[in-house]
Image 1 (tube, rainbow, N blue to C red):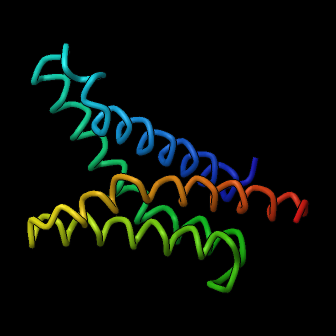
Image 2: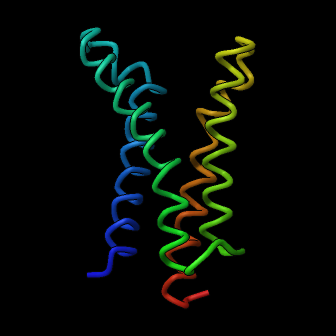
Image 3: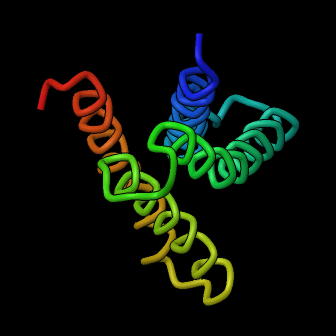
Length: 124
C-alpha cells in the first residue's frame, strides 16, 4: 500500500472521529448521563483530531498529486480550515453564530469527503 493511501485512510478515519465526537458534543441527551471525565476525553479527542487533519490533509494532497493543485481534496481541506476558523472566531468573540456554524458545517464536509472519494475512483 502506498504512503498516500495510508495517509488518506488515516485522514478519513480522523474526519470520522471529528464527526462522531462532534455529534456526541452537539447532542446533550447523549452526554446527559455521562461524567465530566468522559466529556473532557471527547473534547480533547475532538481538538487533537482537528489539529491532526490540518497537518495531514496537505501532506496527503502533496503525496497524491506530486504538488498542490485544484482537486476536490483541496476544496475539502478548505472547508475544514473554514470550520476551524468558525470555532476560533467563537472562542474569540463568544458569538453563538460561529459555534452553530462549527457545529453544523461538518454536514457539508462529509458531502465533500464523499465527492473526494468519488473523484478519486473516477466515478465523477
